[in-house]
Length: 318
Image (cartoon, one colour):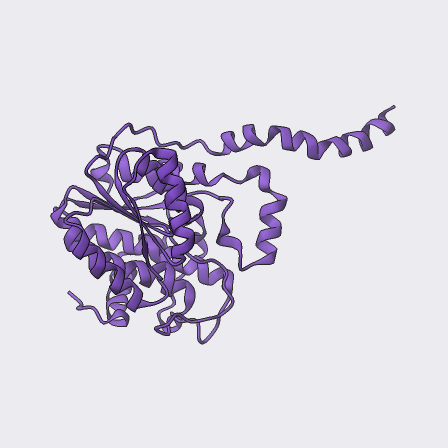
């Protein structure tokens, strides 16, 4: 009898896992944004908002009444998402604007257009990103991961910073990753020309996100602008599109992976939760302050990365 039961259980296991998937996801997604803050009259920019976590973040902010800018590379796809959000939320103030973070000309054009169009900016969510790209460079010659995930958002934030200060209290949320623990900032090989590994390049850029957040918080102290980095969790999204191995892993462990809506919760928590100002510069996971690596706590590296980033982008070093 036992010999018959074992193969039967093997056959039933995928079905049982499928049935248990919602409970497994709920168990793994312990963090949820509980803020009831409404956002009428508030202006928000979300990068990479045409898919995944960014889309769900933008949808929730629109649901709360904000004027939401979907800053994305694929404008056509962004328009479809905007219409979907408008229909779902009843909020018609969902706008799409072109932003290609791999091209500083596009970033500057987006910022120029936004600043001409809006008098305020209350929340900037630097959500867009690339992962495990084959070695390639941005339009400005930066390695793709550090160029898009770090330098692109660094420049965008710099260009919008005065508007954020004028609109204070305001917030900046930088989407990082648990993968930062494997990251290192190799200043002698920042563009990956001496040695390159796609997985590690992603980790390095996510470490840069946290270092940027901490240095930004230090510089913005007393300005009314606060900033936070977040680990959204392992989320079902298009981020793994460059790696067939990662797509296979995501499929294999799909029962344990968060939905985009679950993945958006920590970004929403940092954007909305009242009283979070005293935690500016901290890293969050599952809507709680999270531990970061020793590298991510290194103020010397953070300051040097800031200066190097300014130099690469042609910004004044102060």
